[in-house]
Length: 358
Image 1 (cartoon, rainbow, N blue to C red):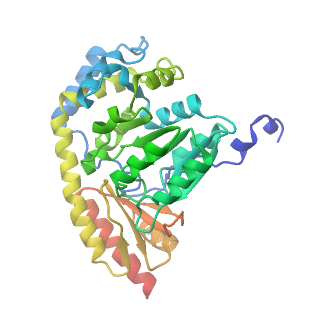
Image 2 (image 1 turned 30 degrees about the horizontal axis):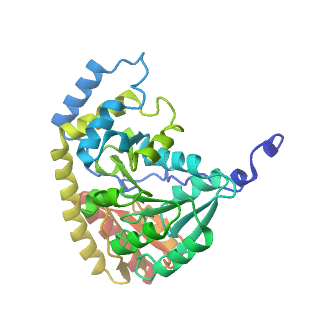
Image 3 (image 1 turned 60 degrees about the vertical axis):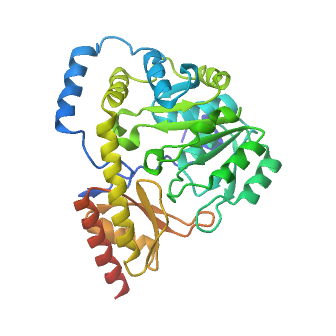
């Protein structure tokens, strides 16, 4: 086709992010909070939007009021916080500021796909260190890659997506201490683990932390946070688009803080459901769930994963399927849903596994 040569070769070689639009009755593929905004809060929120958002005006550039509020929530200074249109925008901003052709980026595998996609889009060299058996960091492999590749950025998902567990804290600390570049600890699923590297932020001048409101009930609003040394945050801010967080999202972020206890209650319910779902998977013949600290469970099966996935879709349940990557075999990741969704998923899974084994 004419003009395709104008598109950079590394872009033409890539695939777009595979967001699954398969029709389903039960959606457990994207690690979303399964609970809608409570009815009383829904009324309050949309009344405030109608009353306060001027659709003919640009949003507040840089979200300074929110930076102050979330800085207080995180226990840091406002100049240590940067808001983004979801964590994805902040990942891209980090790579724009630090990456580029010939620069190395290090990731363990398997991990969140957007680290690789954004890095390759900018011409970076993506280097991988497969996880150890069981899903923890392979520290010797990580340290060897740090020494060999000298990456400008190392991304660590904590808990790790898609495997679900938190990496050992001291292994992460060893990576931060050895790295000559920046280390980004992505705590998108931190609310479900109760663990964070925020208390260690002042100990390192190369540590950055990502947070998001997408997993705790506001996925539609796309609100992410970067927290780190003020000098680094100021440089990343230079590549941020001027009105990157729309007015409704800014209001939603403040609304979250105003009613955080209600969102935390939903998170706690998800954690309780996670325990029951993991136990039920453990008791399902042929299924092996990995330990998880997130709002999802990664599991392998003694049946063909493609067939298991197809059997679930046939029964109206959408999950996320993964090919083998690093030390992880082919697997499925299921989001923890509401009780009735989890029960329907288990029923579909067991029926599918039984049928495939017949």
